[in-house]
Amino acid sequence: MKLTVIGYWGAYPAKGSATSCYLLEKDGFSCLLDCGSGALSRLQLFKDVMDIDAVVLSHYHNDHIADIGVLQYSWLVQNYINNTEEILPIYGHVEDKHGFENLTHNFTEGIPYDPEGTLNVGPFSFTFMKTEHPASCYAMRITDGEKTIVYTADSSYTKDFIPFSEAADLLITDCNFYEGQDGNKPGHMTSKEGAEIASKAGVKQLVLSHHPHFGNRADLLIQAKKYFDGTTYLAEEGLIWGN
Ligand SMILES: [Zn+2]
Ligand SMILES: [Zn+2]
Image (cartoon, rainbow, N blue to C red; front, side, top):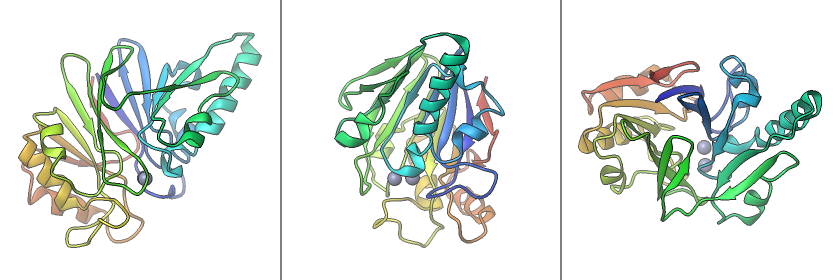
């Protein structure tokens, strides 16, 4: 299983980049985790839009779903040009009725996931955990039967992440704040909090993502490394994990 970071900003994309979006691949199956602002443009450096097989969404904040609309237009245009009728499944929770309904379009189908159950998408199995965030949001634990990735999506710190992330091969954390700041109100974590989850859960590698637009982001990595001694990366476009 291979993961490529497409977008890693919180809130809005800095110029020439994107907010939350990750490309997950195995055996020719390609799945997007979230589809934030700028994601469709940046994705095409790595993947043709019609080669996406599924999308799984954590929640309906714009920095995670902003490009769903243009992804739907891309499938409309490409199906028309190619004289095809391919349908893209987009999985989301149904706690935001309006958000969920917007996932269905001419050539996309919104499909609800049960956060209490297991979602099988191609070669991947997803389980979910509700996060601490102003909008209903679900973290994802994803396995292909060999390796495991945990994506916290958006959340302030909760100890529930420790069992949820246990022994994962890769943990991708919300890292919207620096050590010493308080992310509780907006529902995000600091570099220190993400690293402590990684350490306590015994994960192998950590990617700090969902970056802030203030401060020196290199400090996020320096801070996290004080609390987690596994391999740690600052998310950037094109960062690849696995194979
Ligand atoms: Zn976000
Ligand atoms: Zn959010």
